[in-house]
Length: 291
Length: 327
Image 1 (cartoon, chains in turn brown, purple):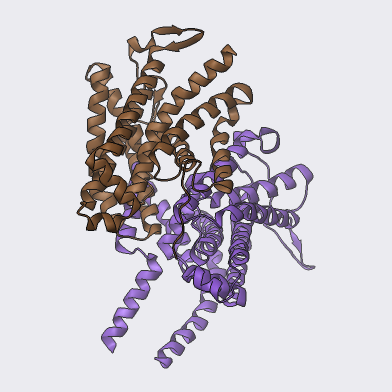
Image 2: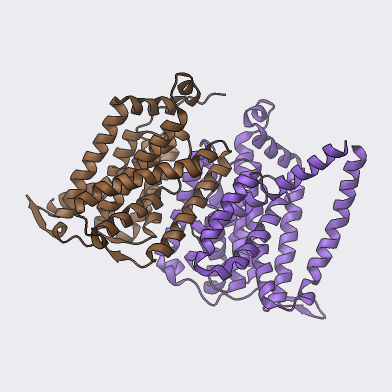
């Protein structure tokens, strides 16, 4: 029982990271209907920005986290303007390939700039051990849990309540109608990129001290984020949040009780099952396909 | 107009034999073994790209999991020939059938999906197959890969026998396979079935309205395209005589996709140009060492903006412009 509880907590921690990455991916898809293939690279660059700020520039960890969020938000704006805005006018084949091209470019540039070797993002105070009832945690994991949850709730609040968030929701439903109602499409798309990239950057900076930072961490991130967004329904933000936690928990349990080699397979099997039985996502509404 | 059309057809019927004869004599013209190697690899990629083109270009199902079928074919053929001592000429059939079977399994759920979901589903499928190749150590030997795969057994023709051990010999096998696949593909797309499949790409609702069985033809396209990838996989395994999961990961799927798009989607010549062009381009970029893939990413981007319909699309646009000027 204690073991199970511990594993579930581990799953939730992993799930917070998945949710943070997936939320942006899902939101960007919802607004401009393009799969942001390079989202994993944004997460990876976020981890490196945090790493350099803390270990090289000596910025305190939490300040570095805030700075990372701001910097990666700016980075999101830049890639939207340079890459995705021109791509938006093109066919689906070109947009997928364009996004893949950006991803290849960023990943390989990162390998040259940051070196492909894994580096240790060490923040001493985060290693403090904490005992919560029967559950053992490090401070680092608790920070991920709390900060991750707070950021997700803030984003969710922003989208539901703020006028700009509502503009995004309107664009998700019908881009043309939204623009007729006076919503600036370009501005809203850029906002989606800023928020999504900021979240991914935060995820990178949060998980950095727990594991190592290295360019290829981006591949793992997209491989996890895609099943998560499908599970929740593409473009569905609450779905992506719940999907992240579900996959995190299922993975932790698989690693503990079945075989840790298969923990990466589980997410994909779950994804294919969802697509077989409920392609609109487990939280999705059925959308009528118009002729 | 009629005359121009006939002229271009005459040109095509004339060009094909010349091209084939030229390709046939390449090993005697080119001494460099490395170039022959690149041509063999290009040939295998042509088969892969033609298969993907059938799935994506002709029936309009975007696939990012093509390397999975390629891997399934390669591993099936390798395991059967290494563990059971079967000849390449026998193992190539289960390789194709097994890959086609998985195409069937993937094709069924993909029918209902829209493009964005398809991209992710096929990507996930590719990842599952890759992870299984890595983790099913008992069958696939995991990351170590399978070594000592025998080359195809010689074919005895009475006076002399056809060997497939050196690069030029294997080149002929691949050349023959590519021509066979292209011939089959051409006949297939010109047939009644092929035209039904093309109608799905143009407008599947209209096609269904005039009585084309959408489900059947979409799955058929998937099955044949995957079978071709299985065939390419077997050719690859018995050429390198070594397979490991790394050759069949997402990068390979993306490369094949890029070859198809760079050449021109839904076009007969596109995959050939794309596969050969990209294989050689990647080699030419090797001098850039670490910067190679960065430049590759940039080139990809330029391709999309400058010629969104691939090289064949660009070629057609130029021809059309010149015709307009002439009129």
